[in-house]
Image 1 (cartoon, one colour):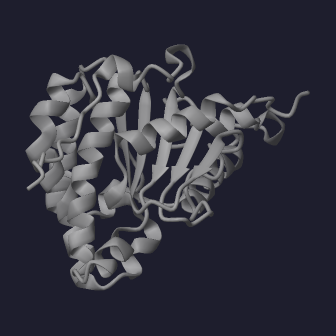
Image 2: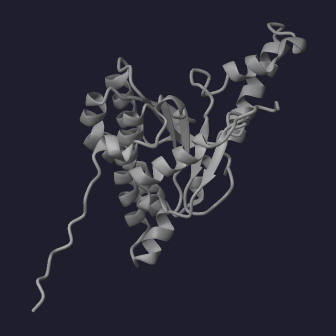
Length: 255
């Protein structure tokens, strides 16, 4: 009988694995629309929440790898203002995910020098979700490494409307002249005023739309779409997106 040799997968050493990534051209800010959890679960005859749970583990891997690659900010679209329309059982589960993620992985985030932040209307989230997020922000606020920015109860149209109201009220009170409203002033009032604009947007699951995500901030970002569902996304997929980004020439409207 022929000798049966068991198959053994070989993990590439970090230096070999990253040899074709230009370290001086890694996107400073990557934004990701994490899509396809439900479809991933459906294909495996699992409940939708199983896809969300699997996706939580992917967040850990992607955060770790992005930090190792030198990404300065990673913004993850975790829950949109439109997601409240989903079944209550699914929404309740989604509201527990930040709690579970941060309670489980916060020590590693601290060890990796990652700083947790959020954008969105946090005050409308359940109390237990707010507490977990606030604690993670507090415990990592002195960290100086990558910013892990969760978009929670975030909708870009709402954000833009709120900024418009704020500036309109300043004009009404005589504190601001309409002629003084510039793009720079508008940006100073966005949730992301303290962050660089995204260089690269990644969306998983084959969908090719923004879904009310960072409409102002993504004006000059490079877009990269993949058919991979978020629970199947991994370090290699992230590198593929970055390599694709590094082949592009960003002209910002110029020649």
